[in-house]
Length: 112
Image (cartoon, rainbow, N blue to C red; front, side):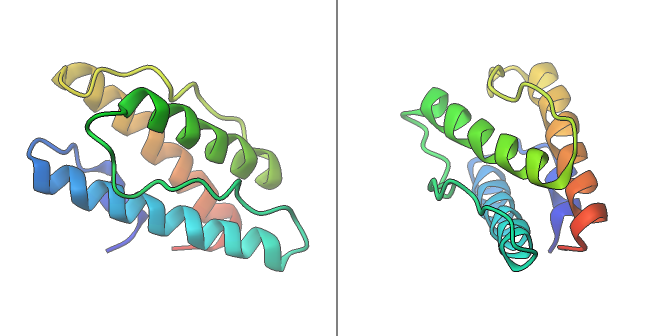
């Protein structure tokens, strides 16, 4: 799998687990590329697994990782801290924004 799988809107717990794993894996690849280019790596927050009991905290940590990634790659980003994972429309919109940032990061870094 690759960052492309981040466009899949998770509906079941297993799909959320796959999203969480693939998201963290792609962030690690991008951070490694940034460090190899002499940049500052990721804040090192744990992004996998996605904690059902602390989603707001995860969203804040995840946003911090995106902020560092986007700054290092010269990309603009979105506010990814606001989403109701139980609202299918909000989740689908969030997934689109989030995956779009990963697509842009992959295009700049070559990290698949």
